[in-house]
Amino acid sequence: NSARADLCVALAKHTGMSPERMMVADVFSHRFYKIYQLEESLSSILDRDDIFIYEVSGRSAIGENSREDVVLPIYLRERTPARDYNNSYYGLMLFGHPLLVSVPRDRLSWDALYHILLYRLSRYVTRPSSDDEDDGDEKDIEDKDNIPKPGHVAGASSQDSGAGSGGAQLWSRRRKPAPVDNSPGPSHWPQRARRKHLFTLQTVNSNGTSDRSTFNEDTHAQPYIAIDWEPEMKKRYYDEVEAEGYVKHDCVGYVLKKAPVRLQECIELFTTVETLEKENPWFCPTCKQHQLATKKLDLWMLPETLIIHLKRFSYTKFSREKLDTLVEFPIRDLDFSEFVIKPQNESAPELYKYDLIAVSNHYGGLRDGHYTTFACNKDSGQSDYFDDNSVSPVTENQIESKAAYVLFYQRQDVARRLQPQPSSSDPPASPACGSPPNSEFMDVN
Image (cartoon, rainbow, N blue to C red; front, side):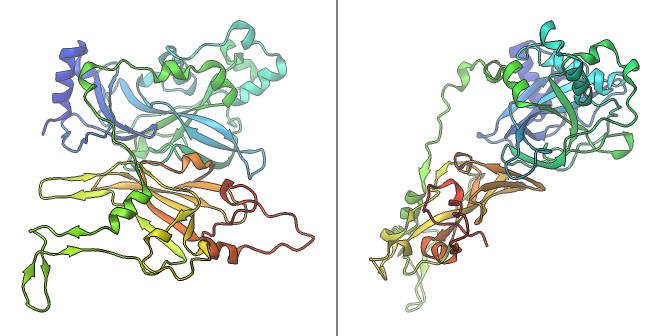
């Protein structure tokens, strides 16, 4: 039942770094799931968790900010073009590892923070050359609109209570930020403001999913900052290989990676004969005694909408844990014919085949968590990711993850019935969820 302080002292022996300058955080899906306080217990950490240790300058911590410094959690996001909206809208996608940066309170302006973060990223971010910085007057005017907004971010005393997790794809249905009205005129901009800025800064919530207005002392919430990259700037100046690189210590060599399982294997196990344990005997209604017995579940009929609840929580006499095994499930043509005892119509295979229409994801542990959803639009065939008030388009290879908790399938004959019949004047209908032409629609209603 060690505390954060004990872990930092132990790490100091291996690294030579002062434990007072260490911060411990649980990082999941490119964001902070939890930032541990100094005397907080680490008993909730599981083997599957990714625990990051950060070195910050000075004796600072989240919720323990000194008068001289404030520790800012920093997220990395990339703008993505919208598919279904006009060009003034854009998507945002989290990437990379988040940062914890200690900043002097007297340097909390946007311009100063930009250069502090640029220095912290210098190991894997290339600064623009002098030729890149001078792109002409018209480009300079555009860059002025995109530089970090002048202003002031004040530290706060407590951490934002919303600490959830979700998938990395985000969607911000708002227009690109316009210049602040009280910005100084061109004659007041320092010379470096005419240089090309690699990224912009934005205050966000603890998930990095929603932009917020500037934080101040009265909000009593921990400020979170997002570094937003344009795709071309990220590709040109951000070295992802260097940023994701690390040296593996010998002590982690023994950790075995869990093999994924197929959904069909889960269904087979669900319908197989199970011998009840001695601690869980069957009560016989005839002799009125508990007896050792076997149990078997069979499928006689299949519903139009099939909901599969994956077992993600394990409870035994000795332990309780969240299961993060990857379950591989098909997007289309999930065949249940072999699991039905008495097929009603073997000549109609669509009565036993299903297409995926939605997935409910769970992030977190036994006590708390965060839910997100993948769902298919029956009209456009596009799959979208829903995370609170953020909605973003996704591809099929992003749907399958270790967070999948509840799967929603629709029987193919139902999808065919519900598919609208186009008139001769109507254009061809869109294929369902990225499927090839002539495939069935998936109804999410």
